[in-house]
Length: 132
Image (cartoon, rainbow, N blue to C red; front, side, top):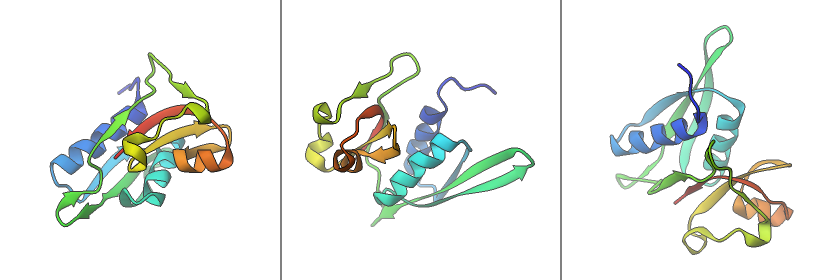
């Protein structure tokens, strides 16, 4: 099956998994998806993730969702830059999401990082998604 927006598909799987109160979800693997999951783990939005080989050349990401007192750690997750409309931002023009309570995930020349890490490194890039 061909996907036009693989990252958007993974974010939708996370959103649907939280809605259904699932403990774990899976998603096809890619380097960009793994980098975004690493940022989500560092920022405390998911418990863990790992890549599993299904068969030679095909891997799946196993994502362990995080809940706090029965409520999902991720209240809102949305794709910003889409295949039809890429959104880029200079670091000085990047707004704080929910007054700094949420994060934006950026793809920068130094790799995928949260908006706080990008501000510290003083680099801008493509705004992939926002998480609260």
